[in-house]
Amino acid sequence: MIPFLDLRAQYAAIGPELERAMLEVLRSGDYVMGAPVSDFEDAFAAYCGARESVALNTGTSALHLALLAAGIGPGDEVITVPMTFVATVAAILYTGATPVFVDIDPQTWTMDPAAIEAALTPRTKAIIPVHLHGRIADMDAILPIARRHGLWVIEDAAQAHGARRNGVSAGTFGDIGCFSFYPGKNLGACGEGGGIVTDRADLAEAIRCLRDWGQNGKYNHVRHGFNFRMDALQGAALDVKLRHLDDWTAARRRIAALYDQALAGTDIQLPAPAGEDHAYHVYAIRVKDRDNVRARLAQVGISTGIHYPRPVHLQPAYAQLGHGPGHFPVSEAMAVETLSLPIYPELADSSVEQIAWAVSQICQPLRASVA
Image (cartoon, rainbow, N blue to C red; front, side, top):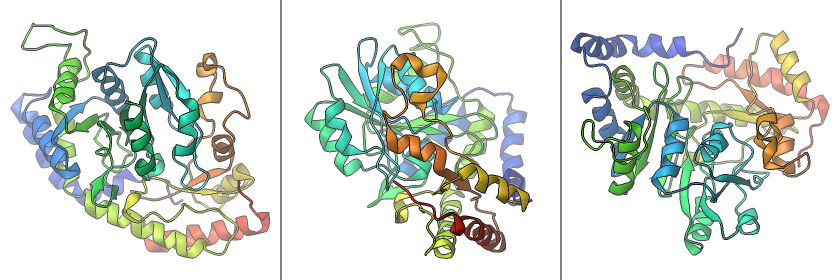
């Protein structure tokens, strides 16, 4: 069986280095925040080209606190997309604000800038573009709209570690960039983790305060805060893994190029060409009869994933937002047609060739058509 993701292969490559760093933390007796976390924050800020980085317990917390630091709350509206993990939308609701959806572009699969203006109201306060699958959204089009209307731009870069456009890193185009360090991410902790980057010291300081019970000095609680701190073991693990991220990203792009070449000329919709804009957290294709294709690949020993099988506006937990089938047709088509193929730095070329051959044999007769 070719697994969809193999974190054991990553561990086999960097295990001794990772163990040394984590053993040092265990021996220190200092397990929450501390030097391992601050060292990672400094390294990640430098990696992204940002002035500030704040480490947190999850990517969801990163989005939540970014919105709070921007002053988003009840009565406000935040524009985002329904083709994302539910955390993007949940974080908006946590603040008391209302999520407002716009559809995605059928080629890039990220926020369609042409849909933003129609979604604006006097209550709109922020836009959250999602760098879906690791591809940077069309920030060149989104940012001018936001600036023209005085809106915050908070990037959901949870899947985009290592993606860059013209030398600018994902997460640094807008006011705050939010990352997840969930273990399966391109830069993943050995457990839960998240963080933000920003060039604004005031936003970073607000988020530092909010993550630690709203404290400004011990037992001096100046905000209604949370326990969203990163533990020292995760900081140490991430500091080690960050040193390998560029090599891992290069490997992902090379594997994506192999898929592109092997599947060219079929009726499958491949990810649009992106270069360094794409970190390939996910290599997704669009095919008709997706579930049948997935089942047939499983029969020949190839594991796949689906990101995401139901857009947020059709999830039962978000029915109160008042949307139904047909409201966001591109996202809805993506939800039933997208199939994620295995992609991770240690995936062998021979496995990529095997996967691509199997996909082409199964999909070509289906004459897949796309929106």
